[in-house]
Length: 116
Image (cartoon, rainbow, N blue to C red; front, side):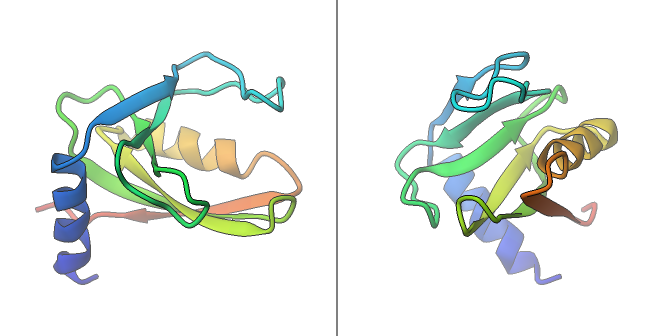
């Protein structure tokens, strides 16, 4: 995968404030059965396809290193999104994928950043 994709994302992350608006263990505002397995938020001052800030999952590893992105398709919202995974271990990356693949209307794939 082209490294410029990841370095451009790194630049966005470094120049933006990370806002965690759904801490680990909190429930989704509209779907109370969905519990966030990790901190979830967005990059302040950025814009994703839905007009809100770029979504971010924050794991337990030190620092905010971008380790992967998850691409989602939501049939109810009729949209697709890219969510960034910062400081997420392999197990946490799997948790995020499972979270987004848990219902019949949403599916996701994980794109891992190559080590380097």
